Image (cartoon, rainbow, N blue to C red; front, side, top):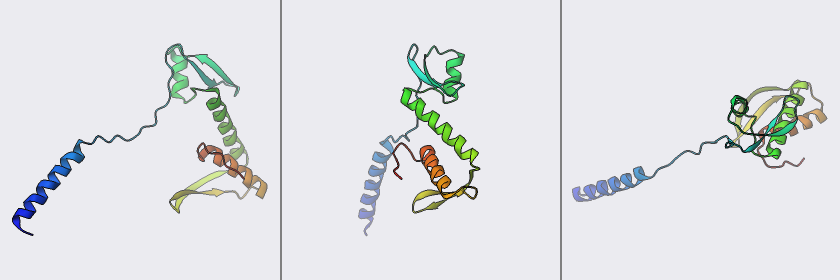
Length: 140
């Protein structure tokens, strides 16, 4: 390669670098939904019931939001109740999270099911799918 070719390649690389630096790439940040003043939101009350209330930006509303107990829809709040029940079922059955490891480009959880029957293990898997499986429905 001649000196002139090197200079041209360096110039092209600098131009490319300038273009790349001009691109604004922002990591998507999950943002917790927050109601506006006077807007209805849903929460789980101390008895596990789902109820709606109006956002007034007072200390009660702010606490509900900070604790993750502030939902845009009744369905979201009801799903949160089901997840809480799933945690309780797993705990009652002696479930323990023993860590994780990578397998086939997915996280595989190592679970302790020693106290569970085969039927109990299936139920625990359903609860784990509810908690960690995303929003897709899982068929068994």
